Structures are given as structure tokens and as C-alpha cells.
Image (tube, rainbow, N blue to C red; front, side, top):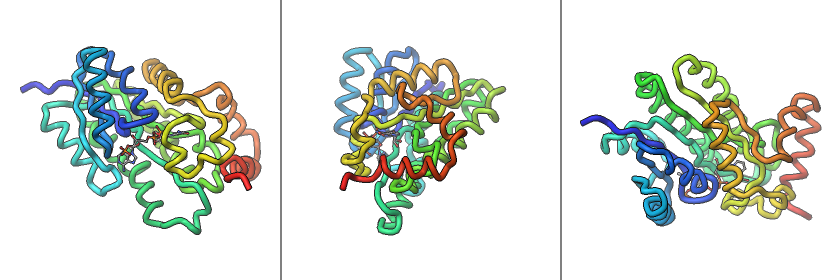
Length: 261
Ligand SMILES: NC(=O)c1ccc[n+]([C@@H]2O[C@H](COP(=O)([O-])OP(=O)(O)OC[C@H]3O[C@@H](n4cnc5c(N)ncnc54)[C@H](OP(=O)(O)O)[C@@H]3O)[C@@H](O)[C@H]2O)c1
């Protein structure tokens, strides 16, 4: 049986991932695969996408923090005779606070999700993309990628990893018909801040909607561009990160991330 093409969105149960889903659901000829731990919101989203766009959607439960989960997810997709030609690595979360007082297993779990699962999924879909000579990869990083982030240290480092990896991979794949787009959202009104413990921080006062971020991210992917910093107020950040001393940027970020006294 010939494999059908699929778009895989991780972290599709809420926030930016759920807002990206309708944009991909409009694309003809692809099955949409939604993956996250909570299936109920994804089932509801799948029903809505079926009604609005006639989209064929598959919901898969996956805890990408578990070692080997990315490989199991790709095996489940292959078992349905689907081949991922568009990968959206969106699942991720942050942890706010002093690194020294964090439970280290929570930190390593976050790194497993934000970095290792992203690497494993990307590596897993590339052979078929290369064989076809086409593919699209969207990796959701953050504006936290551009400077050290005290009070958000490991999270910021994980997103710097995503940005650096994506930019390098985009060059490696540029002659093979595969695009890689790193999306760097600023503060966005999703479940992110309550999970990260940053809902009382200064950054949480100025938020974009998940739909605004998703629309800009999708347009950038379609244009085949390598990096987008979403939201007008965030656009100067990459330039500022080249012009200002990193210690100064780190101190500013520290204030933005700290809860009010
Ligand atoms: N919101 C912001 O201010 C902001 C800013 C910059 C970058 N980002 C990035 O944007 C991405 C999406 O976050 P969001 O803002 O949309 O937050 P969100 O609403 O909390 O969504 C996070 C998504 O990741 C999934 N996820 C979390 N842990 C997972 C696990 N162990 N296995 C599989 N999926 C898991 C969640 O699903 P389940 O809980 O159902 O598993 C959820 O669908 C993240 O990579 C985040 O770092 C967010």
C-alpha cells in the first residue's frame, strides 16, 4: 500500500500547537497527526477540523518526555501507512525559578522534551523526506533563545539549542528540498505560563495570542524562511542580542522573568 503524506504536530492539545492545527488542516492531500499527552482536547479539535475543513485527523497520545517515546510515535504513524512530510516540533515547556532549587529530574525531563524528542523526531522523518526530495520542518524555539535567561536558565538554554540546531540543519538540507524554520515567539497567552510558574512575571503582562503566533509561524514556513521572531515588539531582539553585552541582556531578562516582590 502506498504511504500517504502526513503533517505531525506535537503539543497539539493546547496553545500554539492547537492554533497551528487549523492552518495545516486546510492543506489538501495530507493527514493531520496530532500528538500530546491529553487526548480529550485533541479529539475535540479533530472533530472541529473534520467539520470545518473535512480534514482527516489522527490523534495519538504520546508523552515525549519518556525515553524512546519519539521513536514509538513515529512507529505508530508508519503503522498507519503514513509518512511525515511536514513536522512541527512544538511540544515544550519551561521552568521558572532559581536553578539550584529545582528538582533536577524535572529539569532533565524538560530537556528530554524540548531538545531530545525534537532531535529524535527530526532524525526519524528525514530519510523519507530526503528520498522524496521535499519536506518542511518547523521547530518552535523562543525569544529566550537569544540571550542568557536567569530565572529561566535551563529553559532558555534549551531554546538556544533549538534555534542553533534549526539554523544549522536548514543549511545542511537547503539543496535537498527540505526547509527548516525556527519560530521564536515572545510571551504568548497559552497554558505555558502556569506550567512554567511565570504567570506573575513581567513578561506575562504583554502577551500575543496563540493564533497570532501560529499565523506568522505558518506564513514563514510557507515562505521557506529559516527564522521568525513573532510579534512586532520582539522583532528587534536578535539585533539587540548582537549589539548589547550578554551580561546586560541577561540582567534585563532576569528582571522580566522574576515574579513581583
Ligand atoms: N507561551 C509562551 O509564552 C511561549 C513563548 C515562547 C515559546 N513558547 C514555546 O511554544 C511551544 C508551545 O507552548 P504553548 O505556549 O502553546 O504552551 P501550552 O499551551 O502549555 O502547550 C504546550 C504543549 O506541549 C505539550 N506537552 C507538554 N509536555 C509534553 C510531554 N511530556 N509530551 C508531549 N507533549 C507535551 C502539551 O500537551 P500535554 O500537556 O497534553 O502533553 C501542550 O500541547 C513550547 O515549545 C514553548 O516552549 C511558548
